Image (cartoon, rainbow, N blue to C red; front, side, top):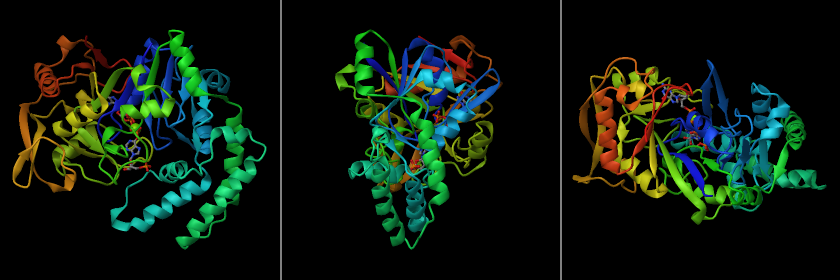
Length: 421
Ligand code: GDP
Ligand code: IMO
Ligand code: MG
C-alpha cells in the first residue's frame, strides 16, 4: 500500500479540513505531517462547525486512527483546549488518536519569543499566528527542541528548565522580562493532560499499517506558497508544507507515496503579510471575502482575496507532483458577471509564466476573462448540475495545468461536494 497525500496549493485555508473529513471513509488512518496550532481546519456536518488545530481531520469517524506525526509542533495548552471543546468524549478521542513520540513541543516561551520577534520586525512583520511556531521549529533545527517522548523522562523538568533559561536570555535581549508563573502552571497542567493520550513510534506504526494493507491519508497544513523553501520567503511558515514534507513528517519513504491531492480555492486568499500578486483591493475582493466568509479560522483576521493565479498554481502542482486537483469554494464565485484568471505576469517588461524569485518584481498581471455563473449552486451534487460557465472554468484550469479536477466543492458542509471520476 502507498500513502496518499492531501495538501494546500495556495496560501492555506483552501478547505483541507473539509475534504480530509469527506475522504476519511476511504482510509484507515489519517496522519497530519507538519505545522501546529497555526492551522485551523474547518469541518461542517449536521449543521455544526468544528475547527481543528492539531488533531487530524479524520477524528469524527468511528473506527479510524488519527496520527499527529513527528513533523508537528504541539502546544499542550492548545491540544487540551481542542480536545475539551470537541463534541467527542475524551475516551473516544483517546481511542482514535496516536501522537508521535518524535513530535516537538511548543513551550510557553516559544509564544513569547514569537510575539517579541514579530514586534521587532515592525513594518516587515511576517503576520505570524503568534502560536510559537517559528521559535519551536527554530529549536528543532538548532537541536535544542523538547519532544513528546521527553515527557516520559525522569529529568523532563530539568530539560524544560534548561531550554526556558535560554529563551529567557533571548527575551531579555528584546528588553523583556517575563513572569512565567501562570503560563507554566497552565502548560504543566496541559502536559499532564497530554500524557493520558497514546504515544507511538509513528514511523513504525505507519510502516506496519501499510504492510498490513491499511490505507493512509497524509494531511498537510498551510499551503505550498507558505512552504519554508518554496513559498514567498520570508513570509512563510517554518515547515515544509509540500508533499516531500509528508515523508519527513511521518517517516515515509518517497517511493511509498501514492496520489497527491492538491486543494485550491476557485480564487485565492492569503492571511498575514507578504506578496500576493492577484490581490484585489476593490469591490470584487470585498465580495469574495463576504461571500466566502474569508476570516481566519485560527486568528479571526480578515483574509486578503484575489483571482486565481495560474502560474502560482502550476508551480505548486510541479513541486508537489499533484495527481488530482480539488477545486474548493466554487459557490463563492456565483454572482460575478465575469471571472478572471491570472495566466501570466509581466516582469522586466516581459511576459512570463514562471514565478519570479521575488514576487514583488511583478509589474503587471495578465488576466484571461471568462463569463461568470449565477444562482445558488450549493445543492449541486453532480458534474452535469454545475452551471456550464463553471464547467468551462474548471476545464480551462485542467487544460492549463494538465491535471484533472476530480472534486468540486460547492459549500462548507461535508455533503456539498461534487465527485467526478
Ligand atoms: P483549511 O485550513 O484548508 O482546512 O481551511 P479553513 O477551514 O481554514 O478555511 C476554509 C473555510 O471555507 C472554512 O470556513 C470552511 O468551512 C469553508 N469551506 C470549505 N469548502 C467550502 C466550499 O466549497 N464553499 C464554501 N462556501 N465554504 C467552504
Ligand atoms: P491552515 O492549515 C493560512 C500564515 C500566517 C503567517 C505565516 C506564518 O489552516 O491552512 P506562523 O504562525 O506559521 O509562523 O505564520 O503563515 N499561516 C497560515 N495561513 N492558513 C494556515 O493554516 C496558516 N498557518 C500559518 O498567517 O502569514
Ligand atoms: Mg485554515
